[in-house]
Amino acid sequence: MKAEKFVEIIGSDFYTGVPDSQLKELCNYLVNPCGIAPKHHIIAANEGNCTALAAGYYLATGKVPVIYMQNSGIGNAVNPVLSLTSEKVYGIPCIFIVGWRGEPGVHDEPQHIHQGELTIRLLEDLGLRVYVIDADTSESDIRRELAQSEEWFAQGRSLAFVVKKGALQNDAQIQYQNSHVLLREQVIECVAEAAGQDVIVATTGKAGRELYEVRERNEQSHKYDFLTVGSMGHCSSIALGIAMHKPDKRIWCIDGDGAVLMHLGAMAVIGNRKPKNLVHVVINNEAHESVGGMPTVAGTMNIPQIAMGCGYESAVSVQTPEELKEKLQQARDAAVLSLIEVKCAVSARADLGRPKTSPKENRDSFMEYLRG
Image 1: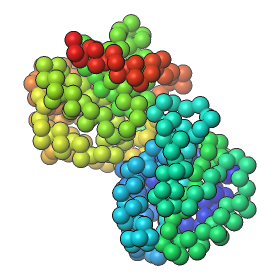
Image 2: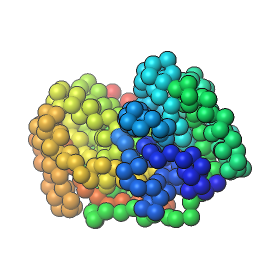
Image 3: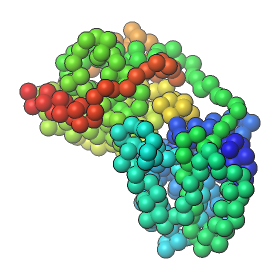
Image 4: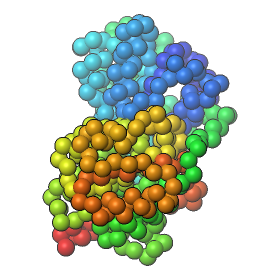
């Protein structure tokens, strides 16, 4: 089914969500200027944020909003779904569009498997009516499901469309870009060089995959690195937990702008504890690149200023390799909590691979290194 036709059939004039590769065609249509007007679409920080935005829209208009997300984001939405939109509380009807990563029987990455197994059950346990969309789902199927859900909406209850891989198509392709020239992989190479044998905690998505390949190219051990393959937005908290309990080791956290936004409060906790052995590197390409390149709001925010307001003792922004290398060396030499924001392009190699070790193997070798 065409994403445009899917949106037309649903008929809502407000969409909010967090981009997902499984929903890439829908996201591209929503972002396309020929799709829906910007005031009718907000890419939010996390899925709970989306659900609350949707609730505000309903309260202001009385119309049913649409929330889209990857199924890994269900956890972020649980609180407002149960304590805000639920028919047992305010009774705010919503339409959820959920990308089904880790669908049973379909090959996927380790971090998606358990989530995929539980997706339908989780949504039903949350009180949502669930309808699965695949490549054979017709326009009449969607119209019929929406018609049957009218009584459900009238009761203040919600519907979830669970979208299988390849279920939606979109003719228009969008090339996301910004004005920055540094590549993320270049940034990670510089961080790895500056870190030496220090610990690196890398965020979910392409950053961890690129760090793995940097180590492979340099014939270095992977034991120094913890690759956060899931739990988007939490790698800085993982890094804080390590830094606090391994004060004799310097910890480098390679983060992303979308991940920072998803759980921005983590920076306040880090700033409060002020671990002097933590360097927080935020690679800001102003995009959710790992799932398609859709924009974040990080292009209009001052991350170093936020860090300083949270209690970081040093926070800078760089855009060139020379600036980056200089600030990495300064952070390495200084015994203070530091943040380095690196502005970079929306770009990744088409042949970028994935780690050849499992998450548990990564855990074991990393912990053995920490013990040593």
